[in-house]
Structures are given as structure tokens and as C-alpha cells.
Image 1 (cartoon, rainbow, N blue to C red):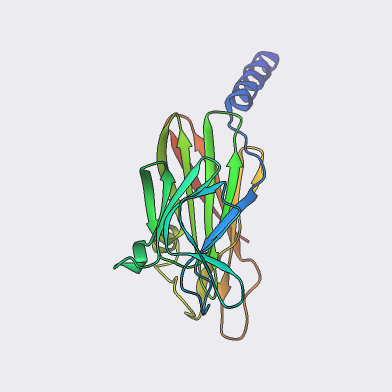
Image 2 (image 1 turned 120 degrees about the vertical axis):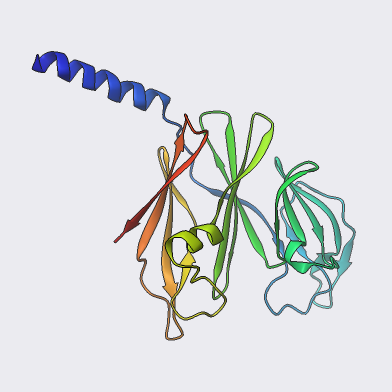
Length: 217
């Protein structure tokens, strides 16, 4: 009986391993947005594979762009520096299929590949606060899988704001096989705390979405 149960358990573990989605390490593929307190007249766009906007040469010879569409591999960003609503001046997703609209602050863009049909992009900003979105394309459809503002509302009572003492700050994600890990710490006027915990994301095949687990150190 023990041998039988052991064989069944081994088969289950093997099956779960075989069908687990695994992820590559995040790789930065570009940046776009407006740096904090910059004296510029448009957005900085770095390492885009294409950019329909016209460049403006700033006094320090930096190129900036007011309006256009920038492509970073399979990810598109529709940007408008003069948008009436600056909270939605950067739109990200597929071509003419944007799934998230963000404010104009400078964003790092990372790409995470999987061994299945899912490609993920991390949109990340940090400056006395943070904002992280995990969006992705699967079978031609785009989704906004994770918004750190939603995590803050659910796990930290919404304590997430610019120069807010004790505010949660999300760190850049890491991957470990089939798990995406997002560490976090706290912002304080006297200095940031050590990393306090992490969120672990795993792909749930049945739900076709990510499960979220919080680990407090």
C-alpha cells in the first residue's frame, strides 16, 4: 500500500511539474516617461524598436517626444505629453489594444518570457513611492494581470502614496522557475526599511490567471 501511495504521489508531482508554467528572468527592454523634476518639453523614450513621434532636442541635447506610439518588441505604448488627463498619458498593451493607462512618470519596461504561450511585461516606477503593473499577451489577447495599487488596497489598507510615511514600496520582480516574486519594503522619512516580505505569483491553469500569496518575513 505504501509503495502504491508513493507511486501515485510521485505521479501527481510529476504531472504538476510537467504542466507548471516556468518563467525567464526579467530583462529590461526600454524606458519611457517623464523623469521627476526634469526640465523637458516631452517624454524620454529609450531603446524602443520603433517610435512614430518626432524628436525635440532639449538644451542638454536630450531627445524628447510629445506624441506618438513607441514599440518595445511586442509591447506598444501610445504616449501624449499634452494629454488633458496626465494620469492617462501613457497607454500600454498590444497594437491598438491597450489594457492599462498610466500617469506620465518615468517607467522601466521589463519582459518576462514563459515556456508556454504567455509573454509578460513589467511596467515599473519608483521614486518615494512605487507603481508596478504586470501585463501580458496570451494567444493574441492582452491582460492587466497585476496592479500594485490593488495589492496595496487589499493587503495594506491602501497605505501607498508619494512620500507617505510607512507607505509600501514594491521592488523589481524576480523569477524562480514557475514563481514570480515581488519583494516589498516601506518608505520612511528617515530612510527605507529592509525588505519586509514578498508576493508570490503562480500561474493557475484552471483560472487562467495568477494566484497571489503574501509571505511576511
